[in-house]
Every structure is written in structure tokens, then in C-alpha cells.
Amino acid sequence: MKKNYFNYKVINDKYLLTNDLGRYIFLSEDQFEKLMSDQLSEEDEITQQLEDEFFLFDSSDYDFVEKAGKAYREYHRNLFQGAALHIFVLTRQCNQQCVYCQASANMDKTTKMTIETAKRAVDIALQTPARYITIEFQGGEPLLNFETLKFIVEYANENKEDKQVEFSLVSNLMLLDEEKADFLAEHNVMICTSLDGDENLHNRNRPYFQRNPFQILVRRLEALKNRGIAVSAIQTTTRYSLTQYKEMVDQYIALGLEQITVRPLTPLGYAEQNWEKIGYTVDEFLKFYRNVLEYILEYNRKGILVIEGHARIFLSKIFHHDAGNYMELRSPCGGAIGQLAYYHNGKVYSCDEARMLAEMGDDSFCLGNVYEDDYNDLLESPACKVLANASCLEGLSDCCDCVFHPYCGTCPVISYARYKTVYPSLNKEYRCSIYKGIQEILFEKISENDPEILRFFQEWCE
Image 1 (cartoon, rainbow, N blue to C red):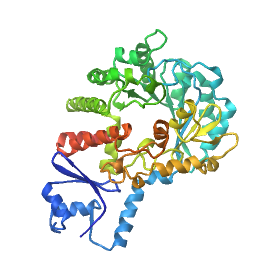
Image 2: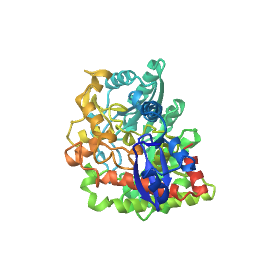
Image 3: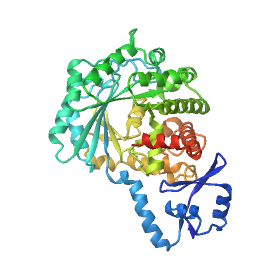
Image 4: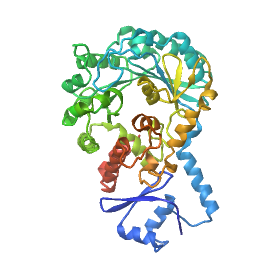
């Protein structure tokens, strides 16, 4: 038997092995020593498992590469579809004053996307080879430019031809009224909002001009629920959140939200300026994440379905070899090749992070302009090529030997913003350490081989 390339790490006294195809296996110390010294018997059950998961092979190198190559291409199939996510930044205006967001309370009326810019952006989005695309409305607060949102939905539906187009709105919902809700329901627009915790925590993180944003949000969620509109929510963790994990999970469940995506702060812009007040260390975040996960599992044991969003992404890769389309956790990342961000003024960026970098005064990842370029021009941009090179984990010295790299990803835009290079040292980088920590927590749970928890994890991926 011959060995395929793999990485390993000791977790809970077991050896975790992973390979580039997204396969994993746990070995005892004795099994690992036999594997490394070529003493495993072909009759051993573990030998067959290693062969089934592409760690061992008993064929010519050519035949193995053909078989493994097919599985590898399937695991990375999102690389062959073109940009499937198209982010429309309808305005930089925002009506909230969130403690971590550089768009807070920006009411500059010159930052609204015009109908003409929107039309040209939709035309480019529909040029992608991807058959299934999502148009996502962002801001600022996109409901501050609802007329353009309506135009985009109607124009895209009229011109989509053989493509299937979904629409998603990322909104704080403060400006939602009957007319807007009816339109969103009629056109099956999915909605994602922000909920950082219970009333006290949410209002502390996301103040709204001396009003109570939490109570307004609850009313808006009820109105959407009555119309049958699917709503999800994301949570942003600040220092204020760290001791409030139970209250946060309880609040999501009380509002009928079945998924909590525990999101760390990105130390950029306003969040970086306020880091001493709202930031935390990697260890502090991972302790918080572990507490949330354990508390969610307690609810699962009671028969109440609630899912942690990052765990769902990683577990889908681990259990089902489904790399998904979460742009930041891809190799290469989804910048340009998986997503495009259309700014209100017609500039096109590689991703949401790139347009946020532009809002900080740096246009390095601008690919072009809707008034001058088409889809192919944008993908030919030097910035697109740099992003692909700098985020291919298999070729990065700090990543290629990491046991978690088949499931992970890096964001060169954030790296450039923080370190002025797209090739920083990632071994102790903040976001890298957080993603590795989350995966280690999940693999610890998997290694314990608790049938109930494994069943919960499998159900989260369905």
C-alpha cells in the first residue's frame, strides 16, 4: 500500500488525519505508528477505511490520480461555475450607529446607487457563467434606497433568461413598512438581519437614535413571519457579548430563529479604532464560541432545533465533502471568481471586504466600473489574479501543512488592510487562529464519538 499526502494533529489523544480532498480519519497512536512504518495489515478494518478516504492506495500512481482527481474536482466544483454571488451596495447611508461598523450613521444622500448604475450592474451580473446566482442587497442600510432595490428585482427577473436568480436583503429592518414587506414577500426576497443578543446587549451594540432598536426589530420579524418570509440573523460578537452567551441563544430561540452564526469582529475601520472597548483576544472569543456551542447542544438534547452557522459550514465539508459557497472559507477565496460587489457609484470590487477597504480610502481591489467594463474585463483584472494566488491555501507555506486547510480559507483583502501585504504570516494571525480554533473544537467533539452529538451535527448539515 502507498501513502497519499496528508497532514495530522493530535486531538484528545487521537491522531486526526486530513487530506486535500477534504477527507478525515482518527487513528489511535498504535494505528498511526503502524501507518507511518508501513506495518498496517491489508486485512485491518482501519486499512480499508484509509483506502476509502484516499489516504492509502494499492494501484498505479496514474490510476490513483485519476480516481482522486475526480473526487478533488467534485470537492472544489464551485471553482468552475463563475461568480454566483453579486452584492449590490445600494447606499452608504445608514440609520444605525453600531459600535463596530464604519458605515454607522452616514446619511450622505450622494451615496445612493442610481437606476442607470443598477441596470448596468445587473447586466454584468447576468453575464456570469453561473446558472444559479444570488443578488444580495447591502449598504449602509439598503432600505434607504428601496426604489433602486425594486428596479433591480424586476429588471433581473425580466432579463434572466435561463438563469435562476435569488434575491437576498441584508437589513437592520428599522425602515421596513407594509409596502416594502409586501414587495419582498411577493418576490420571495430572503432576508438576513442582525441580532446580537437580548434587548440590553443588542441595543448596546446597535443604538438607533435614542429609540429601542430591539423592540422595533421584534415587531418587524413578526410582520415578516406573518407573510411567510424566510428570515435569518447574524450575530456580531463584541466584548460586551462574552458573558452573555446564554441570553443570546435564549433570545434567538424565543424569536423562532433556528440558526445562530457566531461572528467575530474584524479589526478594521471603526472596530479597530474602538478595539480597546469592544475587542478581545483569540482565546476569549474561542471560550465564548465553545460556551455557545455547548449551550446550543443542550437545546438540541431537549429536542429544540438550533444550529451554529460556522459549525454548519465546516461540518458540511467534513461530513459530506461539500465545500459550499461561503466565500471566505474557500481555496482560493471567492473574491472576484465567486462574487462581485457593485458599489453605489458604479465601481466593481472583488468582494464585500474590498469595498469596505475602499470606504477606508484604499481602492486596491477595485476591478473596474460598470460604465466601462463587462464581466470578462473584470475577471481579467490584475487584482483578481492576485486574490486567487494569495488565497490558494495549498500553495501557502503557512497553510499547506495545516491539518485544517481542506476546510478553511483566508481573505487577502483583510490581510492587506491589516498588514499591507496579501501574504502575511498566518500562523498566529487573528482570523486564522479563530478559524483553526473553531475547527479544533468541532473535531474534539467528533473525536469523542458521542452518537447523539454526531447525529445533531449531521442534522445541522441537512
